[in-house]
Image (cartoon, rainbow over the protein chains, first blue to last red):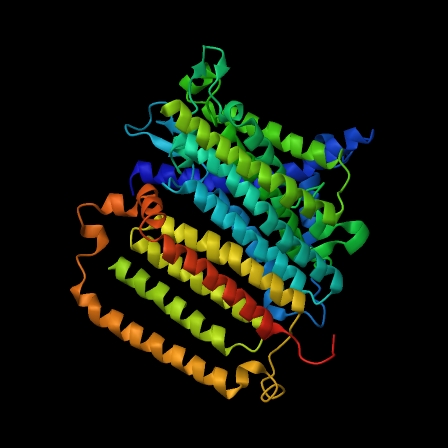
Length: 343
Length: 178
């Protein structure tokens, strides 16, 4: 095995570890940000500023008893959380998070920062993310409890509805870049207009970006669209009957999905690792990438603790009557403008 | 050699899962096994150098349509199909429809046999052809789909609708128990 292969494997391992850490950090960030927004401290006892709180939570969950309701479907009850978290990890496989690098001259051939580079990469992310819904739906069904079942039903209906607007907003970006590869889409956004404004697609696709973010919140089941686990109505929704590690896998999948959603938004609309030329020249473009992802994730958390939950019929109405038509109009206008300007 | 192994592995999963779909009493398991079968098929597409078809298979069939199926099965909450109860009552058990089904099945077998016989007359596999990159590309596929094969494209969507209605009928509970 040569050095290059080893480094490639190292990058894959690093991506995996980063995703695991992302879920732990997001738990911490969420509680801390929520604390500040509600004028209290949040976790502050375990470790400096409560930084080790996620670790303590995991240890606590590991020692909890695993329960399974009597009427639950044995196989699917176990399979559901595994499916959820597997899909969450797998979705990140084709998301690039940095430019090509020779690791400061260590290699003669540059390696690409990211797990895999596929020419239909964007569609792979979309396909694997859409597999994630099965985890939630099966958890709801297999628990044999009415709250869980309603959570699962809501999850499937909500995700089908918002997947449409989500995919349609992506299609406009695909048209602009003329490619389905995430790396090529990012590299199409290098450079600036008039030496001032970076050539990010968010400036060409402001409506598409907003639709993507809203649909992304619904796809990851985050507040204000967290109907599958709406606690006033459904106790805890699809994960009501889960405990211990099996339960822990659901929030983990949710946080990793958030990270993936933010990373894809960065790649598609915010120019990925481009934007700070001197950092990119140093080979540290991935720092820019991480910063942008961090900003989007902060926005996610901010939204959760600011906006109250919708009503379910309002969610459906908004998705089908406003968001989907808006994304179709956005797609048609983009296509028409591209034809007009190229002709 | 590993390619041959992967091919047989995917094929075995696809055939095995498809067979089990029919054998399940619980419609929930049928739906899930069908998804497994679709996943294996998409693996075969990747081996055929058609990554777009493979991903589309996952997004459209395994992702969108099967979620809808799952939703319907869950909504109707049919715990199991008990054949004995609706032997006489269910419309699908009536002789006329049964004959129609048998006719369709025979047609399918004839069509399959014909396709298998014709297979030797095909050109070289796509991967070894000179225009392989063009044939597999998304652009070319879109062009062909919306010009030469528009009718087949639209007809397929109607077929999917029919299948969906079928799922509703099959998973419906009989009688007044609700």
